[in-house]
Length: 606
Image (tube, rainbow, N blue to C red; front, top):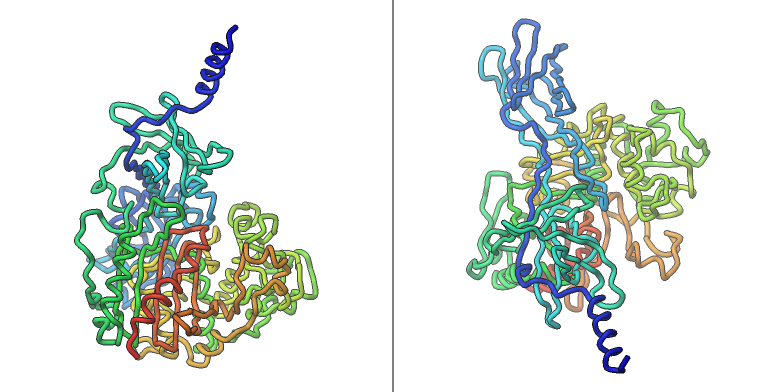
């Protein structure tokens, strides 16, 4: 065989091993929307006929008995519950709608659909023996976008984007190749490729069928124009350039003002927002900011939303919701409840015993230890093998009472000596508050925070026992979350109504634990993978925002994905970010400095 023929055979073999170039018809935006429920929503009617009670909702019905003023009922098939009490002399039934746990897998981040939720609901009397209200549960949805385009090197790449959980298939960008009807997505783009995802291209009409593990089903993605996929972009394409505008006064307690009225250059805010609008979500590691709100000197001066979010839609606060452990404790102390940072956990919760893994060190654990992640339990959210890890806590089925499971954990360290981020610590604060106040946690939150701060719609996540979960994950409007920071900046007062004592604001935002390689037990090399060196207060994270040559002290509530409430007292500034960069702390943790430090604080005229 000639040398030329050998070369030809080798060329054919190599060519056969290279995936075929993808069809140009793949270019553009693809999308799939899936709604998982809940099934029951709409008008809920409760009727009484003598001693018989009956509830109807969306074709479902429930018959139940009522004792005293307490009204509780359940729809069969685990489709939802209501718990409330008669108020206003029988003119209303005030309570909560309890929607069941969702159905999505959402394996990368165990919050949201894995839990049930409580939503405030008031039924008004509409006739003799009849009450009515509207059930508006938390929407359980999953939207997947895919943009396929050629990069600067001419390589066909794909970017999966999901605003709900940042479910991106395991990589920010994939190389896209095609073998007949199979479309392959591989990452990384260079080096040895690993096939991460594969889809089937179906015709008439064109659609990409792909099994998506995070929802446990095959999704059908169809081609969309830019106008048909407005939520893929920060703002719908084709809009005019952004022009700064004063936020509207909506009757929710916020006083609003033009930025110039409180000493902020409005042109600077215009540049900041336009920069966010112009950001390309399909690049590698994009910033996915869902909202940005700023208040100065007690007035809301900037309120902007992106990626389809708006002021009336509650947003998942993730671990920023942990800070309510501190807020609720301050509120309980102000009401003279027998509880405080020095309260011994096992003394207060002795009624849940006996406890597994007895250890004399458990008697030393205080609420202060829980709020600073220094209780010493074998609990570390950054260690999958830790028995108290949040994912382990929420996926195990042996013990539905997560408070009891936490109290049963073995001890790993002396209380107060070692820092390990542990959601179960903060959730145990819920047990302490419930026990000390004798109040169900969502109801306590409503009385102590939501009502006095004039909240709009909100949802509180629950444990399998229907007790409130305080380890993070409540859903709030960004506008309402901002009120919490403003109340703290104003010494614990919102519009003349005291939420917590002024002394508690000072006490709870003072340094309590320094986070470092020494206090975490991590090496200098390991430490940056999980933490940044800083101080923690009582469920508040302390830090500094750099702006030019200066730094400004701050305290913040923060959660996975970019849910940030930050207070900067020296410049009388409170800000809220919400975002979709879940599991990408290296991106969202920079937002306060990038946006506030570099853009907004320099725009303040002293």
